[in-house]
Image (cartoon, rainbow, N blue to C red; front, side, top):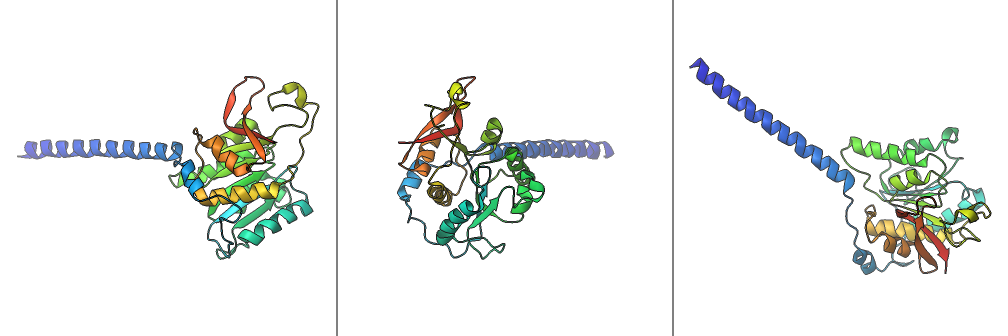
Length: 269
C-alpha cells in the first residue's frame, strides 16, 4: 500500500513540475511578446480622424500627461514660454495634480537637479503619461528613456505611450533605440544628412514652426494612443506629423550607407 501511494505521489509531483515549467515558459514568452510587439497603428485610423489643427477639443483637465522636454538649441526662456503658452491655450498645463491640463513641460538644464538628464524619470514621478516628446535631446537622454523602460519592465510591460525625439544631440543609435522615431533637419548648404563633407561647414538652425510641429505631434499621440511601431507605415506617420510644408526622407548613415528604420530628416519644400 505504501509503495502504491508513493508511486502515485511521484506521478502527481511530476505532473505539477511539468505544469509549472509550462507556466513559466508561457509567462516568459508573454513578456517577450509584450516588449517586442508594439500595437499596430494603421494609417486609416488616423486619416479617419481627420488630423487637423481643430480636430482635438480644448482640454480643461487630463488624467494623463504629455511631457515635452526642451533641450539644447530649444531651451531659451522666452522661446519656450511662447511655445508653451500656445500649447496651453489648446491643451492646458499640468500643475502637478490629476485634474490639471495635458502638457507637462520641462526645460533642460534649468528644471533638472544637478543639470542631469538622468533625473527625467524622477521628475515625471507618478504621472501617467500619454506621450513623451524630447526636443534637442542632450547627451545620455537615451539612458534616461531606458530607465523609464526598466520601470515598465518591472511591471511586466513595455512603455505603453509614444516617444518622439526631435532634433536630438544625443548618441544617434541610442536615441533611435529608445524612441518611436527620431527627426532631424537637413543641414543648410547640404543636400542630405549623409553628405559628411558638408557637415563640418554648416550649422543646424532652429525650425521656425516648432510650435506647429509640437501641436501636430501632441494630436497624433492623442489619436493613436500607442507607440508607433517601426513598420512600413512609419514614414507616412512621420510625414503626417510634420505636415505638408516639409519633405521627409530616411536618414542615411554616412559611413555605412545604410538607411535607418526610424530616423528621418526633413527639409522645407
